[in-house]
Length: 87
Picture 1 (cartoon, rainbow, N blue to C red):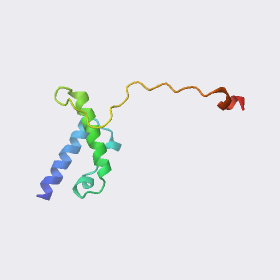
Picture 2: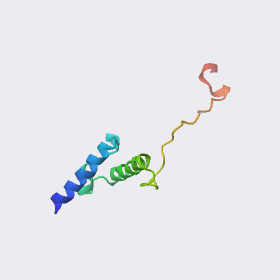
Picture 3: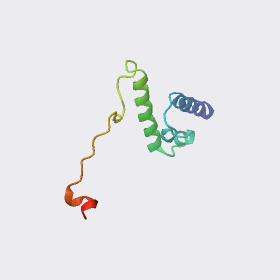
Picture 4: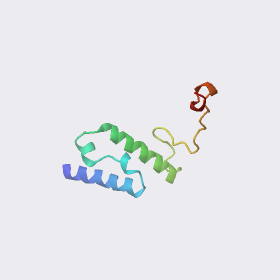
């Protein structure tokens, strides 16, 4: 049974690579199988959810976690008194 479980985990991880989830967001097999890094597993599931929604919103209508911002917000300018060129 453990071999089948690890094989299923490996299949999921290869699917993550196929849909181009960044490598730093993908957990390792031992992280899930031996419960080593639950935080990384959650990051992978959030990334997978986001990517699956982008690829097929009708099949995956609900996202897990925050959405990625498409347009970066503008950074306000510093007041003149805090700007380094006037100090």
